[in-house]
Length: 354
Image (cartoon, rainbow, N blue to C red; front, side, top):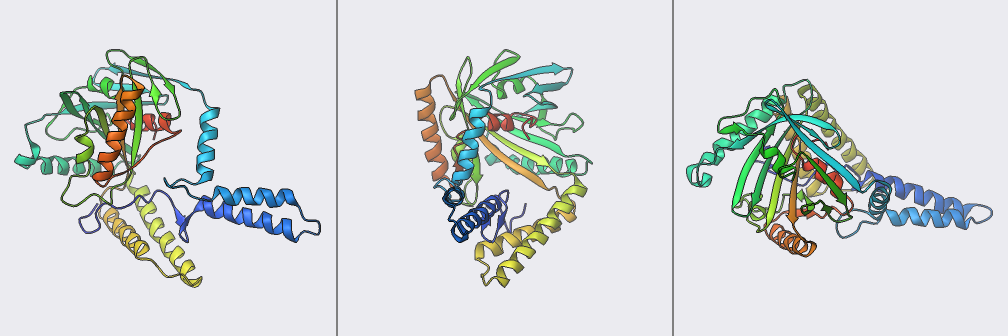
């Protein structure tokens, strides 16, 4: 939101005294059970074992999630149905997508005019999109905007999806037929998918969805998604912007700053020193509060990358190449094990999974 602070790590995972909330709750419950089991008149081995299990669930793995999150993800995956259906219909100028919640939107195609970076038009294009997002924040309800870059071999295009009542910026023309390609429908109106732990399978292809976790390591001289867009194969990039309504956005921004100050007082009273990372996050939150108060939009940003292939071997090769190129470019991706259906819905145009 600002050149001063720039893009940083996600603040979606709330932390308290350096750890996430579910870790703090599990740790306190585990320590409590172990303490009760030991101090009881008759030592309760059941409580001690249960407390140790809860403490083990707090341990983070190398990829970031804790053992507790991995266990919860696996249980949800085993409990839900593997088969899922998505359908898309066009009504006049509107598109209605069922996935399984229904959303209505309009799809617009970017009028490409050669190399944008040579003409400077990319800057004007970005500013016009920012204007659309800021205007959407004036609504009394949350709005959803998404931009999709789709590539199939030599064919590539950029699609923008907007709420039905939102006019497009200059340089975009209505083309709802692109929405079917972004949903991987091809020429049909309904798609049936089977979820596996690491990918989705349809009649025509296999797909795997990654989510961008962190932009902070991208060099200032490079475009944020440059390495991803240059990856070979069938790769779609979906940038979703969930715009928070104006009055709600101001309350959320002020609450985040208040919470950060309260946590800082608590940690200082406990004898902990504020780390540089915490100070930088506080600067970002304070600056965000000022920007929102001045009329800028408060958004939830999600970037998803969909890799599709005709065989499992090809899909694994393309995903390995994408992972290396994204890492070399400074992007940190999440593999989405057990989240493939959830993330596929979240990256669909219109945001049915948000």
